[in-house]
Image: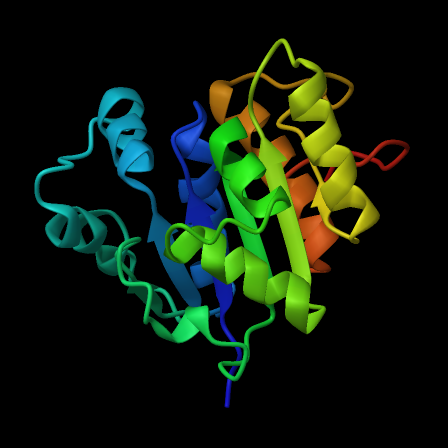
Length: 201
């Protein structure tokens, strides 16, 4: 059975990172289970203009019309009994992008107050890949301590920090750089940005 990736989108700014990652994974033939927090839906509305009052319709509009080989399953964050809440449901891992400091704290402290946090807890207890992409600035000591706690558990901490050495020309270039770094951590091949020292194709 094909193992899906889990993608979580939270209420931090930068919803475009999570959407771009999902679209790439689906185009690459990967299956995705998508969990969006209520605050994440607010950000999708404010930053990308999605209709947060019609969530299932928005998911279909923005993903299912792409005619890609991968399959996306949207799971409401309140559905604490969903498949990803159990370690017996096998996945390749999880990416939380963008990751708010509230969600980061919930994961670091094992809160499991919703499906996203519970799924991240499953990744930790099952020893699966977990990548969190914090998007906040400046950071105070509690933020940093929570990141350190997770890093010591083997979680990859990948802040949404676009680089400039590849000569970005558009906002999409900046988004693709961060998503490309996430895909590197997932060990998925891509050509979303020019790597240092490599010729232009």
